[in-house]
Length: 397
Image 1 (cartoon, helix red, strand yellow):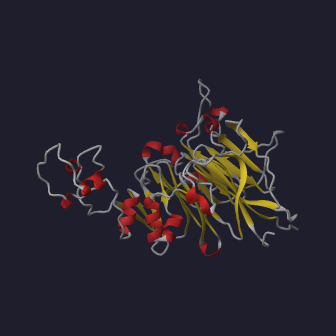
Image 2 (cartoon, rainbow, N blue to C red):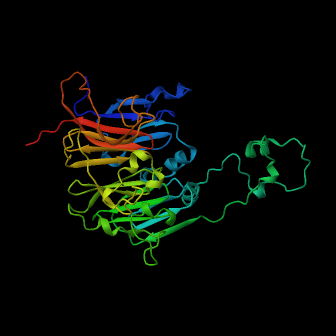
Image 3 (cartoon, rainbow, N blue to C red):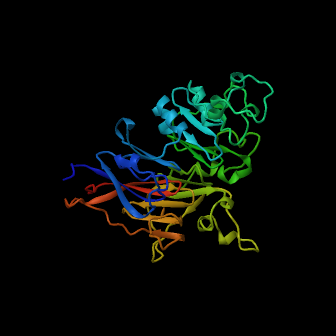
């Protein structure tokens, strides 16, 4: 019998790196696991709160003290190094698809952006040297016979099968590539998209910055006063009809950004050119279509979800964005999805490859044989996976 108050984590999607495989015996499995085409219960715990899903691994935290409780998949060495150095930073850091990394320091009200994760690690006093790197002051630079057999040190450091070690020596890094943005108190969320970042304050202010070539991801105009590279507010999100923004959802591998207001309205913005056709439809506005029949909004736009009868679905309480899909949760506990399903991330089965309109996911939550009613508390998404956090149904007046 399950202990009272147990929560469950369901998931669907890519499992090529065992990122959905939470069994303790995962280290004995040498191959890739099958993708999950329908939402499946992965594990149970008394307190499941936060899901951080990366391309090759998934980390789960509980609400109490934000403690780590579970891990699945193959964790890259730089991620392991950051967890070793500072678990608190690892839990909240944001890494964009262009390799830039951002962290927030609440004590100094500062957002710091690094060129790479290695820069962040070195700023924290740690450097993990990749095996192909070789500092120039560690080799005696002299003319060598091209046919000379490499030393064991050179072979280990530079993978001598592909190039000669003494042609690949690099200077030992001395400066850390970073920039600090000060004056940002009470940042509640810091997230990355494919070419930049977005931050949400506790008062509902949304700040964006990144590559100016993808201005759609900024959701705002770029000017000398509000450059693309500096965190600046998104004016269209500052005075919404149903209140301020309370939640952001972004994927570091996508050009789609989403937010929820205090009144549970859903808004999106981004760069449709970088999205699959199944998600481009979210931006299309027939009233503004040109002669070719295509026009995309260049700022945040409201999203309306309708059921199979065409009725509008009210009260979106949670939303999550993946690389090529979205998942939304209503106050009635219903789950809607849209986008690509090439590895099962929509949870609609193997026959469906994509959906261009919001589709309700048929769900059957396991009560564990105890007769306890279950409900979905929250949704989350990884690049190619979707997650449901399930708990006991709350009694409502």
